[in-house]
Image (cartoon, rainbow, N blue to C red):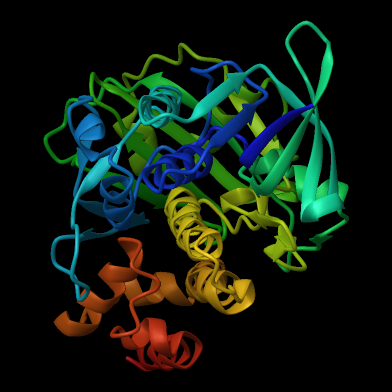
Length: 410
């Protein structure tokens, strides 16, 4: 039986940043990670809001010096319409630029930075079981090492940053159905071969299928002439296409003329992958002795690249609550963690729902956009979904519905 003041399940972005923040408080942190880093992961386009959390965790310099592709905004294409948001032109204060990253390298970098700050990370160790509320209010965690041997850790508090593994939601039966339709994504990395000056490598490009507004493609440029490419659609749409994942992705890409032309010289050198039914929700984001971070708690949709930002925000909120708790204060986890985290998630959720219904697309492609409203929208696209000075955060549903109606009339 080992002991850990705080045990974190998962060394991805949420786990690594949480570990660093807690080490900066002087806490003893043990991270259990099932995989060996570096390992492939999707979700490569960061949002500027995430830079503040990297800075808070003491990781900013390492990320800036890593040579990742600079990012300053997002571009959207629908048929013959093109619109782009520069995240430096936004309503909210804070970072307006960030990076587009190969997650294998990015996640490994964050994990190494957490270890430099004193966190212990055990790669290729797998959590098998968690027994909460043991004597003394602690938890007993059963772990399997790379040799198949089991051991137990007596943990004072558990942060579940296991991502789509969703360890605690499964063990505690916390999962609830997502209100989104079952969607899937087919994706790969390619040598893009893009030579046209019209393509802005400093922005993620989101292309809408010309016949289906709820089918879209991401093109995320990396440094070195490569990019991440993927399509997102309901599974009933994806199931129409036959062949390998690569062949299916190529067939769907060929249906969007501007994207087909853009990637005419691409080299498809990495087999495509597919994930299905990734949207997830839980009854609650915390309980006695534990909290859920990032995707372990809730994952919406990749369309606005919000996943890593939500992961970082959850790590920051949880670390702040734990600092007060270890100082002897009584912490209301619902008020200090659950409610504020969901507030931003719900803002993103409203925009995701509007995107797939077509209303938000009508907004961003509208010919006569008011500059101040555009800056408010740009802030949310940049990740500032918790900024209550932004009317589209403070009253998301009402403001967004009114803007959709106004665009429909003009």
